[in-house]
Amino acid sequence: MASESKSLIDPFNRRIDYVRVSVTDRCNLRCFYCLPKDFKGFESREDYLSYEEIERILKAFTELGVRRIRLTGGEPLARRDLHRLVGKIAALPGAEDISLSTNAVLLSRHAAELYEAGVRRLNVSLDTLRPDRFREITGNGDLDQVLRGLEVARRTGFSPIKINMVAMKGVNDDEFIDMVEYCGERGFSLRFIETMPVGNTGRDAAQQYLDLSEVRERLDRHYSLTPSVMAGGGPARYFRVEGSDLHIGFITPISQHFCETCNRVRLSVDGVLYLCLGQDHSYPLKSLLRRGVSDEELKSAIVEALALKPERHEFREKPDQVVRFMSSTGG
Ligand code: SAM
Image 1 (cartoon, rainbow, N blue to C red):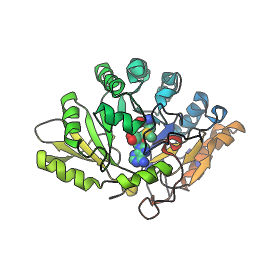
Image 2 (cartoon, rainbow, N blue to C red):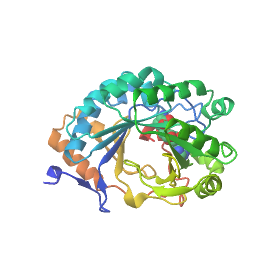
Image 3 (cartoon, rainbow, N blue to C red):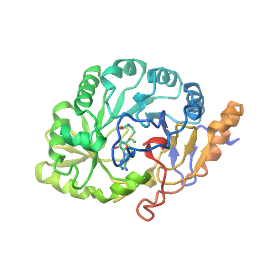
């Protein structure tokens, strides 16, 4: 029977061993390319999966061979007692790697309890090192809180800590070298990301789109970069700055998509399984749970859902196609 399989293989022969979970669609920042200031379309809280429901779904996934789980959002630290969920996931026999994507605004307060509960790897969004620019990009965010959060995380022992910088023309394209230096001095990795046409805001932000080959050229003038790999590196193509331990990744969903190696699915805050960030193929798991399905039926449903995974996103060909916001799906 399909549900007894120990690995999830999609129709394009890709092994799916990674689930990204959006634990909330709320965020304490309003980055202009992600979530509009006046956004009103949040899910109501009773539609959120509870921690127990997330645990149950992830248990099914780990029994089907998933090994890596990332908590994201929205801003995951905006959901109360996140460490309680981390503890539950860490207790699942197959969950080998639990990571967190955060804007780090609340990180100094929560770093210790998250580490203790089992998170080891952190991705932190940081598009600028200038306080005034940070306020503009994030809708009045306080850069100091983020930098403090990062410092506490570093001292707590998270490793690796990867900084995600969305590279945007006319917004932060004069800060690439500053960001490389900042990360190099602190032992962080740095990943540049191309702006994606996700949600209305992302679509508008496409005007600031910057092909990362331009970023690469600029870095080449300052540093000698040699190809490298990073464990759990996901879709980024990595380079190491010669003479240092600094790894720099380029995530190029638009200029050079990486769908042929896609290994992930996304669980939204309201319990819908999305098979692709850039397509609408989905499967409602929460309604099944709340109807009282058995563990075996849940696993069969996940196997069935996998059959819907599309070959690739079409951000480039159909930039107007996706209306879902990143915060709901789990960016
Ligand atoms: N709040 C958490 C954080 O800040 O990392 C997790 C969620 S956030 C949606 C995840 C990542 O998605 C961030 O690095 C953010 O910059 C990125 N992102 C959001 N909208 C994007 C877009 N239109 N194009 C590219 N990246 C985007």
